[in-house]
Image (cartoon, rainbow, N blue to C red; front, top):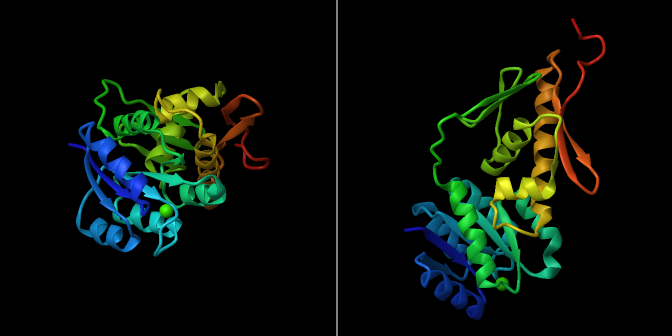
Amino acid sequence: MVRVLVVEDDETIGGLLRTGLRSHGYEVLWHRTAKETLRDARSDVFDLVLLDLGLPDLDGVEVCRQLRQLQPGAVIVMLTARDEEMDVVVGLEAGADDYLTKPIRLTELRARLRAHLRRVAPVETAVAPTHTLGALRVDTGSRTVALDGHPIELRAREFDLLARLAAEPGVAISRTALMADVWGQSWFGQTKTLDVHVAALRRKLGEATLSAGGSQPVPEIVTLRGHGFRFEVGEPAAGTAP
Ligand code: CA
């Protein structure tokens, strides 16, 4: 049974989420404060956390950051009010996988959760290819990434996104296709999630490039305005080519 932790201080929303998810077979634990949440997160394991960003006792983004450390395997979905747009970006950077804007519609929530949980479940594939692009090596079997042999630490969804891009270097991939492939077919809207993950990948690739200092070209994620992204392997840096 899928274990869901609902963190929501609003009695109406929390009650709705608990009833709605239980009726669809989820095991639900509901907490109203950050204190209770973090206490349980230290001793218990959850598949999924629905986290209200506006909690009475601690900033939601800070709760998210601590939850990510305590529950590395859980999918964290933030529940946010419309005036918390900035918090969403910070929350995604702090470790959340996705967000939903209130008012929460149960049909949308369940569709999104199904998509997320499919990603979490181990997938048996006959072929787990390795993509080598210049200095970058993406191994989808071991889910590891290395630049010039130096490992790069990625979060689960960052890895999925990089692997998707690396599977088709030089090809323009639309935002819709990326979202469907990485976050699931029933995932829609919420484009900020994709942008924050692309930004994180660029930052991590950039940092790894600086510290690796090799002569092989390093691929980069090129933005295609109004369409999506393309993964490109550039030329070797001037003066370092053989
Ligand atoms: Ca609240």
